Image (cartoon, rainbow, N blue to C red; front, side, top):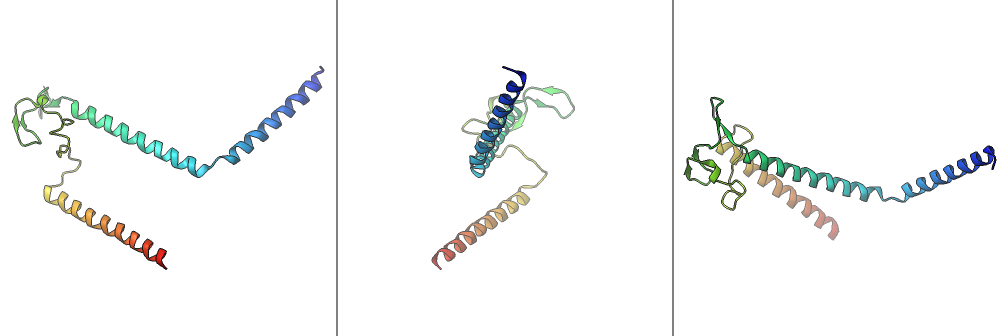
Length: 139
């Protein structure tokens, strides 16, 4: 074979391959792919958050003066007093549903007002949406 013939066969094969790739990309259902991709990202983020929270809550405590204290003293979230915090598990059955991590400096009352407001708003939005959906489907 001559160089020109090899070049022609190569370019013909390349253009056919590009044409096939373009047709394959056009046949993909992109909306479905995007939903699965977002689902995978969301699931991965939740898993990473769970792992990070597990690591954070398993770390030893530090004293307020900067000295290392492997065991924290004081009241546990389940209402009991303990001189060794390593005997309490945040992920155990007794500690899993306890409020153990604060994000802001809100008091209990402020946090409860926000919680009740969120519950009321989310329920009303849910009911309004489904009420409109039902009304539209009847008409």
